[in-house]
Length: 460
Ligand code: BGP
Image 1 (cartoon, rainbow, N blue to C red):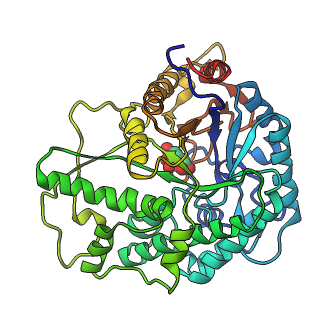
Image 2 (cartoon, protein in one colour; image 1 turned 90 degrees about the horizontal axis):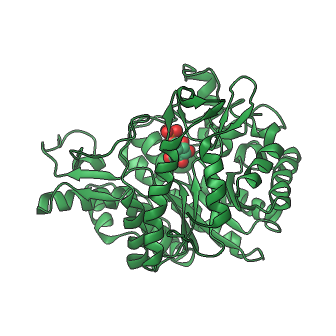
């Protein structure tokens, strides 16, 4: 085969609790910010299906896991809902949740699928958000206890763990750009949230190492958006470097190298936006770096020098230092509106190889959202050739990176099945399987058969 992947390559897909589980008011689950937001503030746009039911994995996990096995998955990522496991965020563990996650894990293992478990996918328990969420150290400590509880409960059967998925998203959405609850716009608070999240990461890693998890590996999942300058002129290069500092290195460096880039520290200090730290934090970060890195990659970030100087009296924002730039002739996903740039996978992997100690990594999310996907249905099957091509072209660049020495171990699609998304509900469909929103019936798309053959041959 021209594209043969290394032995034991991880083929699978990624999901998150809020987006697939449903059963939000069942099994003793407490509320998280998404349940709250959906009930009180969203206008229930798109399909009127929200996190309370979504794709109903809560009741369909058995058949779903069998479908995963049928299409050749050897790994699968899901997240534990903190508010399901510990309803108020701290305190007593909910035994019904333990049973549910035990069942999911056991079913995966019985089907030869290794569970990859993520601890936090944007879903802060409501009560802890009301205490101040990630701005508060007490909440960070509650998170570390929750993580510790998960390792104790499930560490005998789960060896791959992740502290966070895309920790920058709650920062951007919740504290900078006003698209996620609690909809605060305040860069100083945003950087505090970002910093505290990384302290939470380090504390969880520290807790993990005190458990004797067999073949245990703990890491983090980051959405790395390679930053490409419009031109090689110094102003564009600087703009791109600063965007990279804010959007990639602000998490990548502390997670993998155990320290923040000095240039970022200097920049925040200059503008009076350094977060509050505690004695011992730097040692904590240094001692508890990730052992494995999940890379979510959807699209690049194209950047040019700022055209108009920012208003010095306006609030400080990362965008003071750069403008976004639409590259002429760029390839777009016509069904979702994001740029498609497959080589980004290669650039990310080579950067990890050269500057981040070639940490073991994998593509933990990549995928193509498609609106009104039913229109591609023929003979009862969605003919998603565009998705097959999307995956194949990204895999080719991943393959090239591996040939050149990158330590990439697998590829997970976002997502196993169509599911509810934070701001877009069911508008953009991503799955190997479609989901009928009324009956919850799953149907394989053409890409499901294709990935099966790729996984079976370990290449294409
Ligand atoms: C990623 C998130 C996922 C998922 C995906 C698709 O950033 O980790 O949770 O939602 O994006 O995005 P969207 O549904 O907005 O198209």
